[in-house]
Length: 243
Image (cartoon, rainbow, N blue to C red; front, side, top):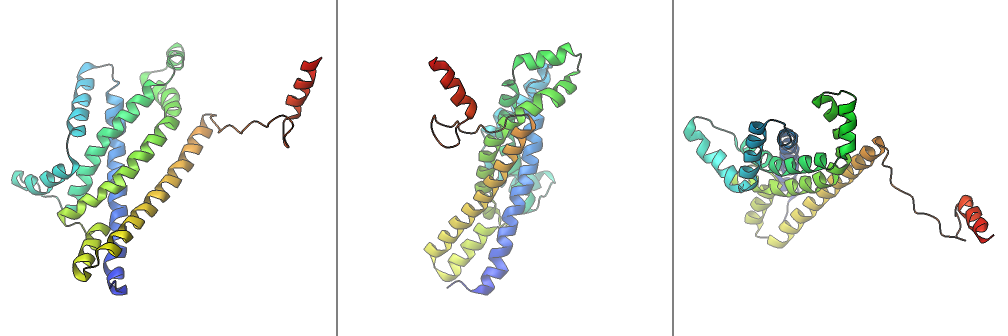
């Protein structure tokens, strides 16, 4: 049976560790996403080549195997990482590669006329990127980044295999101690869902603010003719059309 002492000593700290891993890995992944995503659109072929190589290599790697390698193999080269940072590094490097494609694709989708306007105004490449391209591409990045962040949250369960005491690690300990498999894993499913739901709500708020910042406010449904709240202008136009 689940005791209150176990929940306080292991589960609550495990939730906090899961949140920490998610935040740290997301921060590292965001830096890599924008760094590699911008580099893939560089005018220099060597920069594009190196960024593309990073993308292809880390996109094709297993985050779990990379985590094992960073935790067990790096010490052979004289670099020892604590389990938490081995997990954060592996997740950040892997999901950063996925995020770089979001950045690259969103920037490529900006209308060419907007970029040409920046060139006509004699903006530097950095000025065009900062003042024109990124503000317009950012609203398109938020929804796929939301999905990627949810995948990252669920991927944090992998750190339990290298003894990081996240909530999955705590759940496994509780299952071994009580032999109650179904209640423990049901609780874990609910906890991951709650965290994912909170992340989604936060990202949707960020998406609305990003769209409002560039004048892309959500459209209100148009009123039907004769319905309550229908536009008076629409009614006058319809009446004028009969004559």
